[in-house]
Length: 362
Image (cartoon, rainbow, N blue to C red):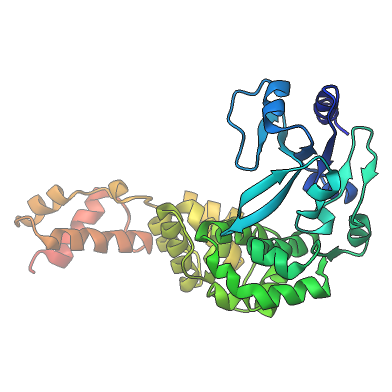
């Protein structure tokens, strides 16, 4: 255990309280995976934690404190029961002085294993065996857990995807039975979980589980069978059809652009000019076009923006002795296409000759 984490536990215990690491950090530690998000549970009350750590903040929504020490994000919460939920948020909690009561409220057995400052594991609900069996198992009644917080269903599918685990039979049936409750979640929460699923190379496992549980119908998610993994999440979203997720304006524009490039089925001078290097590299992963080749193509572009064209609208007006009109923009666009196609050199003398030859008598 890292000295920073051990000292955090000791600091709480030195004040006469219990303190244990719990959740994903312990799970990942058992799986030999690196993690920097550290959840600590304790019987110290939130006001005591503020005093112990001299934290100048209000307690978080879960009745605890959080802070960062070097590479670790540390979240400390008081043992509690969650007595009443409203739209997945516990609106009535009771602080308790018993570790077991706190553990029972958690979602899955693999996330309920504790670790003390001496690296001793406290495994009340046999989560280590479920890790060994590669099984996602709900704590207590899965139907109750998912009714309290429907996001747990997406979390189960996410863990199964990222860890390459199976979902235990009763837990899986409960997801199928309660899938419609996903509709009560905000688009932001659904998007966050789907992003974590899609960001993993094992993403097809997650998509298959969404289909088997019929959650894909609930969130109106569809995709083609030839969907490919991309390192950039925009590339993944661009291969999906999904309604009512809260994308930013920039995300919407980037997704639409990558879809347009994918629909052309190739990376060429026109896609590079119109959408830029970044979005073409994202689309290139879907189209199996090598990133190095795309970079070379972009560097070799004769023009990268309209400003690079070696003739202006004013030049054309003077050359043809005509008034400003839409015709000017049509001519410039025609020139742009021919330059990108390699049919015209981007030199003013060549462009003038072409314009006079093509448009003088119109």
